[in-house]
Image (cartoon, rainbow, N blue to C red):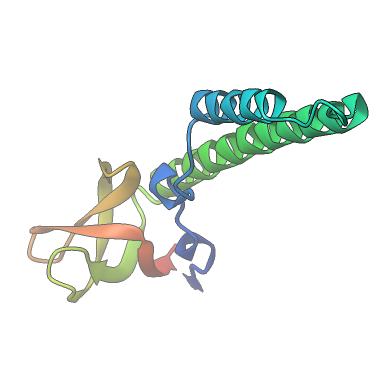
Length: 141
């Protein structure tokens, strides 16, 4: 039985995450801006404490969203590893990651390249081809 593998085309890794500053860098930048704001405020109309609390709450919310994003990226990476290990022993078709040639063979193992799983596919001539999980087009059960 042959089934298309659309779900493996959504490979994810930490390299796919948007490049952002670390939480520590953001905290430092926020504190620098806050100190500059306090230092340069007009003495006749000081910063409203409610406004300051709102800014701190927004910063806290941003930190939580970044943490959630990091957890989501980690979860997607674990899902890709799980998908790759579930393909061991199955026959797949896909594109060789080195040559770009279409290949088909039995998955005999996995390796990792830049944090993403790569299938080791043994071809009919007993040579081994590397196929990125996202390049798998078909799985024969």
